[in-house]
Length: 148
Image 1 (cartoon, rainbow, N blue to C red):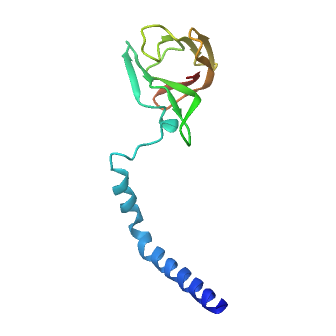
Image 2 (cartoon, helix red, strand yellow):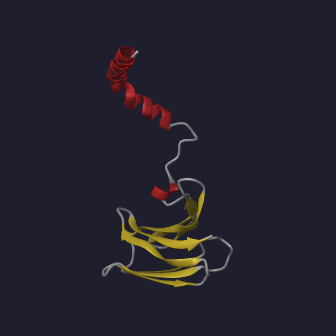
């Protein structure tokens, strides 16, 4: 019985190896095809979430994204909201943000681009602190930690 199990295991390993070698060249096309399905989305923890509001100014565009609370299983109590500035930015960025779109300002953010300093003034008790504030290829991006 032990020799049959060993032989079956070796046969299964060889079969899987052959299957991988045969399918490997086609995996790129397969993964590209699968990624086009409507249910396949990039995780909002990577992208910052969907755009909730876009404000066009003279020299730049401000994009306020929807709050993200996604966790591995279910939603978290703490999340973030991402703010993107795109275009020709001034040295000092200062904006009042309403991330939940209730017509009440939630926080004031001031960014000094030359010294990479970010100052956050919460106006809503759900707003906690600056998670990250960094220059990007398109301008500047900041993630603000919030609670549900």
